[in-house]
Amino acid sequence: GAVVSQHPSWVICKSGTSVKIECRSLDFQATTMFWYRQFPKQSLMLMATSNEGSKATYEQGVEKDKFLINHASLTLSTLTVTSAHPEDSSFYICSARDLGGWAYEQYFGPGTRLTVT
Amino acid sequence: QQPVQSPQAVILREGEDAVINCSSSKALYSVHWYRQKHGEAPVFLMILLKGGEQKGHEKISASFNEKKQQSSLYLTASQLSYSGTYFCGTVSTSGTYKYIFGTGTRLKVLA
Image 1 (cartoon, each protein chain N blue to C red):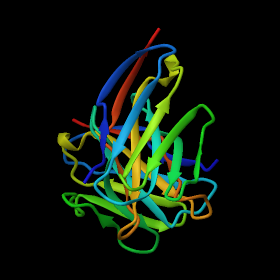
Image 2 (cartoon, each protein chain N blue to C red; image 1 turned 90 degrees about the horizontal axis):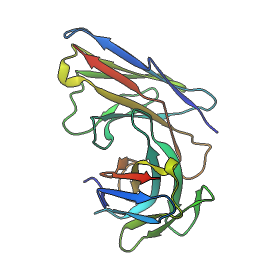
Image 3 (tube, chains in turn cyan, purple; image 1 turned 135 degrees about the horizontal axis):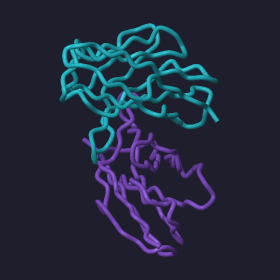
């Protein structure tokens, strides 16, 4: 099956610094990738839709200047959390659609756990 | 408008059955089911499409009522490995493609 990787798996950073998370589709091309955030004991909340070659579409309430998304190629999307604060600590998961796949099937990365101290 | 799942949580003994429901306020094109273990990414279980097509694991079954905008996941003869949080993910028929997760159902299977 299709594989999506994320890097890093976990990161600890100081408040005020920026953190970049990479999401890669390893064996398929993904024109669209999605970024989710999950707080403890809660569901995954869609943050933004990342489109190759164009601006990301952010969900209501997500600050686009704080969560910068770049989808530079058909296999790579990056999420940069700028000026991170403790309340940004969360589990960030990306997913990608395989357009050659069946019925909008999505493949999820393993997630990145961000802790801001 | 996040799909609502019920029950919120359930505890079973090995071998017992469970049903998890997912209800959306929007007309749906497809429903996807995932299981997530603590600290891990969701694992795909099943997709159900409007019109009746479905794809998933042999030991998992589910239904999709398009008119009611509801889906149910059936777990039979539960095993310890079934423990986790189950999410439905939905794609609506209106507007652009957007994938929204349900509220989640925590399932624990006891020996």
